[in-house]
Image 1: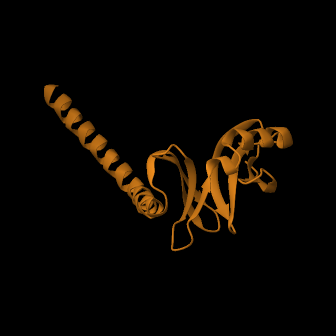
Image 2 (image 1 turned 30 degrees about the vertical axis):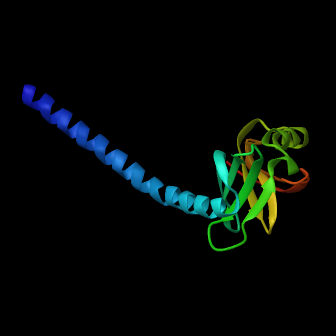
Image 3 (image 1 turned 90 degrees about the vertical axis):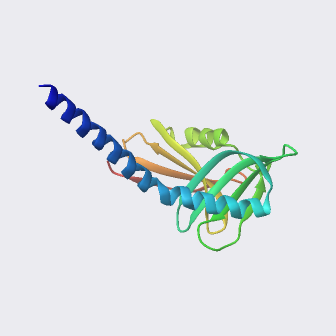
Length: 158
C-alpha cells in the first residue's frame, strides 16, 4: 500500500509540474509581446508607473498602456503589435472606463458586463465593451475614447 501512495504522489507531482510548464509556455508569446511594446512606449513616454495594460485584437493588434509619469501626469499609449505609429494621449482627454460603461448601460441595458478594454480601429482610439445582452447574446459595443460617441456594435448567438 505504501508503494502505491508513493507512486501516486510522484505521478501527481509530475502532472502538476507539466501543467504549470504548459501554462507558462502558452503565456510566453503574450508576455514577450507586452515587453516589446512597453520598450517602444517608454521611448515616447517616461512612465514611472503602469496602472493598466490592455491587449486589443481588432483589424490590427494593439497593446495599450495606462500609466503615470514622475510628474503625476496620466497618459494612455497605444502601441501597435507590428511596426506603426504609436499614439499618445493624456488620460484626461478621453472618457474613463466608468463613463464608457455608463454609456453602454444607458443605451443597451446589458444583463452582464464581461469586460472593457482600450483599443484602436482605423486610427480611432476606442473602448471595446463586451457584454451579455437581454437576449443572452455575447455582444460587443464600441465607443470613441475621445468623446464617447457610439462607433459600432455586434452580437453573436450563444
